[in-house]
Image (cartoon, rainbow, N blue to C red; front, side):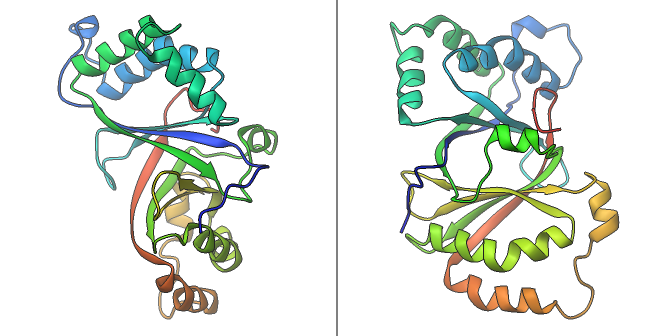
Length: 245
């Protein structure tokens, strides 16, 4: 069963496909779509969201080698549903931030962008943005794992992942950034694994095993299938505004 842990924070997750159109602001600009997106994000969207109490947790671009591309993933940290309500009111018609939200939406429309949003609870052992920054945690290159669990088994899956998989994963260069439970859905968990040394992690630690899987993985694979139905991985690279790099 999905549980809310009162000591944890909440997160807004945005997946934005960058589209094939062009904004009139940049018709003479030959920079990549990712660069254009990042500039408008930094000039318009990020200041507005931070003014409303959201903290930028991460902004990553999908690498063209594994994942849907061109695509950007944005994660905001908020304290509670009250912050979500404030942001929702502000962007609505007649809201305090209707104009800047309109500018942002117009840019997305002009560029043909499309997206998907999620509201997420943090897993019980996740660290906050402040804690991660204090620890010097780097998330310049990450694996995003969108997991379909068995219905209602999100917390069970995270608990067993922490117990059986995380120690082995971190010993092979994949540092656990956290696991997030998508609210209003009954079977989704998103994990993030920061790759030690960014791209060098693949040189230093892959393949994770060459012959028979280690005992930890054998144990994990005996438990995991009863808790999950499938998953999709993407390799994401931090864009300039991202704080954990």
